[in-house]
Length: 432
Image (cartoon, rainbow, N blue to C red):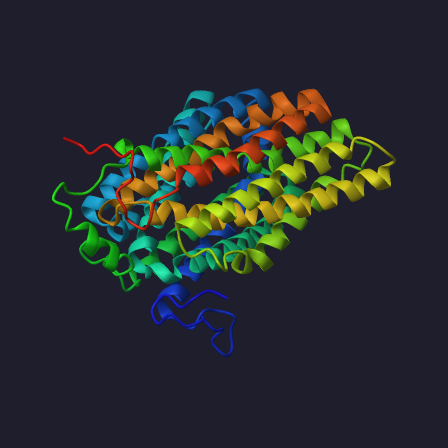
């Protein structure tokens, strides 16, 4: 389990329910659960709603979502900077209802242009909110408990996605405009529910009221040059870019692997669902355990390096699924999904620590915005990268991806060498 964000003890299930004993972390967990259930409802039905109810072509939907993804890449930094000025909690209290309005707006879209505009607004709000929530957690929880707390939150969020996706199956079965819109209404309600829970969160979310980074902030405050600027912090930018390469694993799982199963192996198409179930269950059960031992920059870099090797190994196992009978291909895919997910768990835990400990605690919003923008960029270009390698070139493409992951781990370790929590990076350039 995770360290208690207030006392340093392990957060225990509070008697009658499997929730952390600490009230602050418990509320954060509830917020994550409500939000992820709503996300599961929406993500499961949105593409079918856009094509079958609105009447957009699959190509138009893909183009619109790509444009929206690019907008999301550029949303993190300005939202993060705004959070540093007005406070993360205060900003999220505004963003939550806006996200609810955006998802409800899809019900009134009847043209491609309107779809693109709304998708861009919704994605920018979503990506920006992710960065602001990360900054809020960084300021609300003490440093020693943050990584494990984030691991717990990620486990809960994956469980919520599974619940939401299962609930959306009803709408998929009905395949009606009313059913799809009902899922969107419920998603909007989830945003409002999270906002209500956030309002009672006993933190200010501002730099002045931060408790999680108090020690590091005190040390950084002695720097006469003032807070660092993330966009001029070369080490942080390099680490962000390298970790974004590791984030290509998401496209491997969601785009490359389904296409590879159907087009490149003899395994049944049902294996697409099977590997997704394996991934979700492993994340729910083992993400907290995988975060143990990730306590500082050095251990985070080692976790990312080990995770990168596991991701590379998963790609090689996927490549092997091309050969042999259907049962052998299915077995290889399951083994590959297991190895892949273990790599994902380690790189996630390492990334959280790097994003926090290499940041200036006085500018957590901006720094988290930069890091989340790197992840968003990987999610935008990932499908293209995976398609041009593994999907188009088969086993050779999988080997190329494996090489990319294997080389990224040592590069990231080298990039953080000599760095510490809140330390001034050797290559950082201060604003004049």
